[in-house]
Length: 137
Image 1 (tube, rainbow, N blue to C red):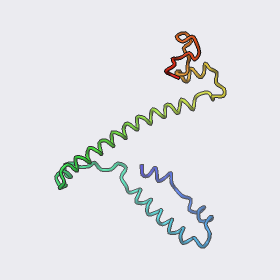
Image 2: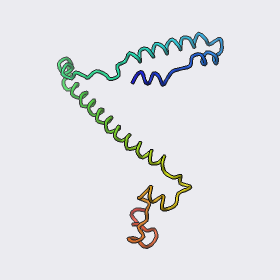
Image 3: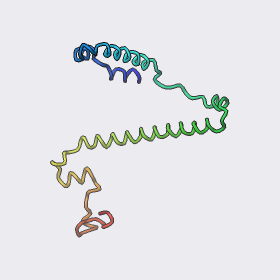
């Protein structure tokens, strides 16, 4: 993951050097060296962080309940991330549906009702305008 992000964020230093003024070359060189330092540190970071040894911290932390509290918070964060991933998948499906739909200015009422079934009016159950219960307005 770190390598993939690193590949996406490359800087064209030759083009950058051509654009900057001569009096700022020293600043640009320090920026380049700092960028290379951070890039190498980022590449050295593991793809997946090591697992937390909660038993070790429970044995070595003096304040009672602190480690248990952190463990609950980490688990709740992990649960939130997994639920967020599920929501992202659902939103991507909705986005794909929106991308593949006919543009609104070219839609007929039948097309609109097919894409968005909640917009279909029930004229048999509610024969008079607005063809839906008053509570839904």
